[in-house]
Image (tube, rainbow, N blue to C red):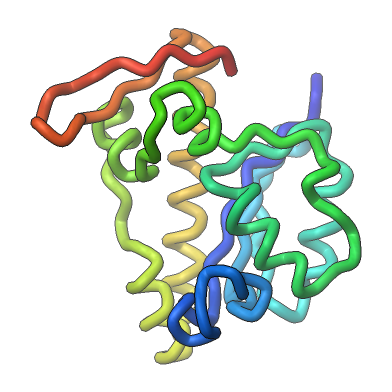
Amino acid sequence: MPNIVYFDLETQRSAADVGGWDRKRDMKMSVGVTFSTGDGQYRIYDEAHVNDLVKQLMRADLVVGFNVINFDYEVLAGYSPLDLRAVPTLDLMKDLEDKLGFRLSLDAVAKATLKAPKIADGLQALRWWKEGKLMQIAEYCCFDVKITKELHEHGQRHGEVYYVDRSGQKRTANVKW
């Protein structure tokens, strides 16, 4: 059975704090979370253990995340010379964007598919970081990893996920995950 590693991270700084979205590596990781199908365990990484996170991702048979290629990997590039884009990766957001022609949020797909809204957002995670509340960030990040895993598994089983369009209509996105 392949070792699929589901992954998400939160940052210490916003794009505005570092001078724009082209400086993601300067945002720095506050907390990273993985779930590995190889051992069935969640792992929580703080910045001091970012190299252990990179090692786990590099050893995965497949990394699955939501906006990991254009965001999370770019943040981690500030810590490692290794090119995480070389790791087999399924970026659910990118896959959906390629199929639909527009971006969807994790919250939009999770609500429509799983009836499971996110418990916070990235701006809240930044506030928690400033307040030193790493456990809240870790809990939020774990929840996002769980939602990503459940969305991936739903798409694998059913060949589709759902979202609500701008007019409020529930729509289907066919996937081959």
